[in-house]
Amino acid sequence: MRKKLLMAVMCIGLLGAPATPGLALTRQQRIARARHIRRIRRIRRIRHKRRMNTVRRVGVGAAGGAAIGALAGGAKGGAIGAIAGAGAGALYDAHKKAHGHN
Image (tube, rainbow, N blue to C red):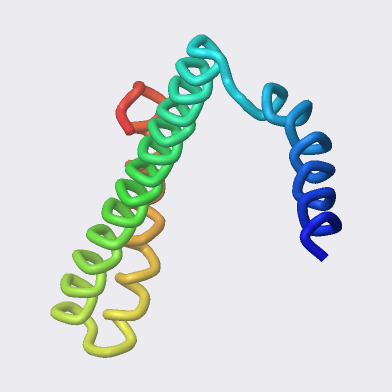
């Protein structure tokens, strides 16, 4: 029993040993991987910021249009104003992005 157990442990050790150096990363590989991860996180953060800016600009336009429309024409005017304000906010967002502002 002990011989079989010892033999099994030795076989696993001999089979696993050659695979270990392939799994290890060099210092340069670790640095490159960390740099890649930081780059991806930065890109995701920038994309999220752009999306939030767009939502904010369109939302503010829609809210302003709805308020002005409601004052001028009641509920129906508020709905029309919200649509017009959202369109104006989208145009403003496109203008800002065209000039390099997120």
